[in-house]
Amino acid sequence: MQNKQEIVEIKAGEKVELFSRSFSSVPMTYEFTAMAKQGFELLGRVEVHAKGGLRKKQVRFSQLQTSNTVKASLWDTFLTIYVVADADLKVTTPKRKMNALRFTLVMALLVIVVASAIVITQLL
Image 1 (cartoon, rainbow, N blue to C red):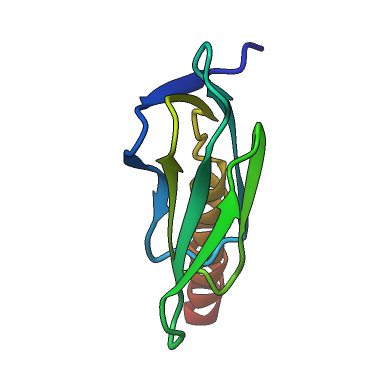
Image 2: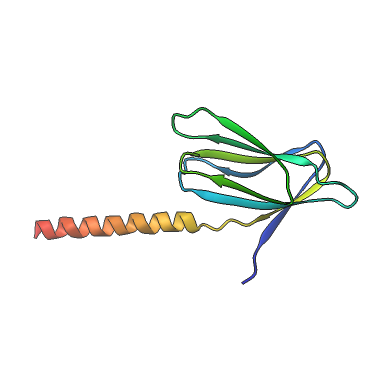
């Protein structure tokens, strides 16, 4: 199975949104890699803007690394991840699969089927 990826080129001074989610409390891990373009040093930062429920918006900063991981918790209902480049960069992100959504839809369908079966047996 081949792993599909997206490559985003970011010029020095640019701020680019890599990932964004809204109205989701499913814990997830976002991973991406960064590489300096030829002849440049890897310089930049990762900004994580998170807000959830009654919490105020929080912004977390970290130094851009070759391999980067951002974890979204149950409380990060709204989350946006940016990369701010201080030098020309190439950022590689995996194409996201819809596994979390698929799981949620299957579970919802299962609840509906079970609830329908209970209602039908009560009516008979």
